[in-house]
Length: 211
Length: 211
DNA sequence: CTTTTTTGTGTACACTTGTTTGCCATCCTG
DNA sequence: CAGGATGGCAAACAAGTGTACACAAAAAAG
Image (cartoon, rainbow over all chains, first blue to last red; front, side):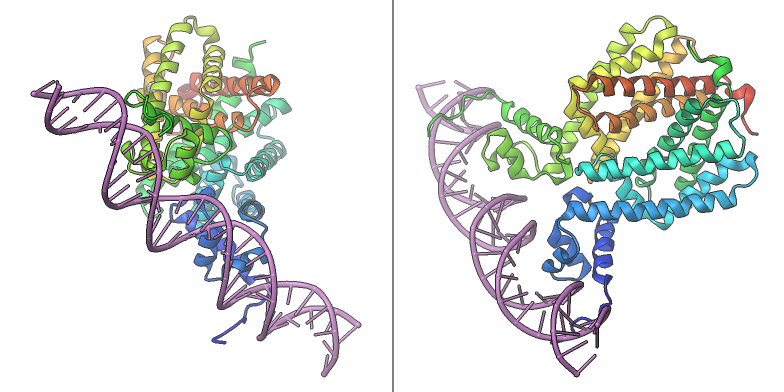
């Protein structure tokens, strides 16, 4: 009665995923969310959940997949906009921060998932990070910005870069997204971290390299 | 009736904290734990919980306090055992890993808390990390290992070091603690990260430093 | 020893949870 | 337009949840 299904296929599914992200954005941890809670937030009856997901872990896995798309979009934008090498890090970090602001809940979910409850989600996110790191390696090679580094050392450097940026998520989720000053502080600090790392990479084989 | 209280004061309190950590160690996320679940694991009646904690967040905060003690013990051991500078990083990382193995559940809790549900716990852990970073700064100054760095740059470097080590927790909780090979891989990789950072720090002001 | 404070227990209640089952509206395909 | 597949709804249930209350053993205080 009342009004029934006007929904086109897949709409409820998206509503459920979005509801989970919304709750995460409100400060809840994904691991503490329940099926009923999510369906309630989505404005849907509990049983509708099972039409799309087997359980909350399943929903989490599908969120990781979508997260992959978000990351890829970000990567594409970075590749287009960072052309000259001198402002590379500053601009990359700016793009990262901007995407985090735009998809805040997604990135909070990602930060949570790294030490989350579901082993599968954990591994999924780690896998995304590995992918990201390897793409970064390729780009730096292609731009001939790391010619003096071996493949292994370049990969090490990129891994550290990705970790550092990822860790800055825990800073970002600690401040209000509207607090421009704080966000900017995090931006310049992260940029400095990356500069420090690249100075290390530039002097790597010559200065150190134990054996 | 059966047998009643043979407990000396504060024992149940410890049992509850330990129970929470045990569950965390079993793969659960702290945010998803309930009062009843924790008391059940502790072998105590649910209402006993309220004799010691107001709610789960309160328990989390008190866990952060104990975590502080664990970290301080680790710091002390590092200060005693790392005497000559050349193996500084290798030994420090080894000590870190060893303490993580010894207090695994505590460190998993820490990794979870960084993006956890309770804002207070989050801030508590971040505060511990800041403290750790500043102590590291002091030590490096005292050992005269960073004479060419300004206070701000030294602080930046130490912060990055602490973050890198902290992030390696997410690697460690992903592998079995008995898998010596994998643990060793993480150890050498983390050590390389730190070496890379310190090479960067050593060449910092001379090589880079934008304006 | 007595009194008070602390700490653990048992029972109880109202509420939420995950999941099942049966029903119907809509969409897709032929 | 027929008919099956898809996706949403309502009602129901057992199990689990947080929390309150009153009572009792032990420890601390006098």
